[in-house]
Image (cartoon, rainbow, N blue to C red):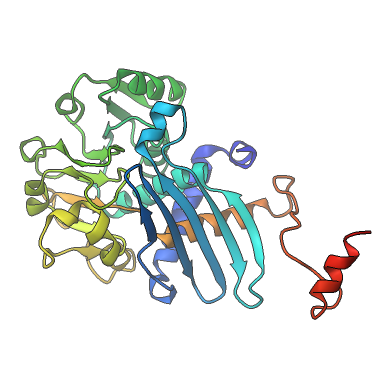
Length: 330
């Protein structure tokens, strides 16, 4: 948090967007696997590992919608960055806040390639912990000036409106999701219920919009009516993971999707017409966390925003681990 305030949140979001895009351009270098998930009735606990051959990272993250009623975070996380050449960890950091930042930066990076040019208005359906980060990233990276809010809990909308006072965004609280999307070129859905849901129906989505579907994803959890997907061109991070957890789990396995990294590298097109509906079916992927960890590592160097941690055994003689233990009695 001190690092973010030192740099400035919009600058962090701009810089992090660029770092994530840099790594998407190197997509083929990375180890890739769907996140390792342990599901329960209450939620999910996941590990998200990856490596580019020089740096290894993982994130531990949970998703427990019931936590909100108990005064706890729905999502918490921490992450680790390690040197592949030695296997030694070099950074351990909280990632609850950092995940919100990297999710917002990834959304902005995708919208930079997929949203209508000159977009000024975003609708935010679901005004929980991610809302302000999403709004500020779209403002910083795309120049969004107007934000229209809706949540089934008016207190969440009021919280978001209050937190964004003085941000330079013109914020409108709406009483329905239908009202919120009026005039919006970008529609972001970010809800946390662990169920199939219809946050947007087909008749609500007009030609030319970009939909940013980022709500807490898992098997059996969606936000969009499947007819929207039938009309949209859908872009994803890593298809084997998105087909399990994303909006496209509603569709047949031959439903066509485009991997976002191919758009970022120029191998294929993103938005191709004014009337095209583009959908970023984002579930979050380990490479985005890798980028965020790499960004933090580089940004804390030479600052007071970190502390050394005695995390691993370091015997004087690498073969004498037991001797090190014995000497610790003294």
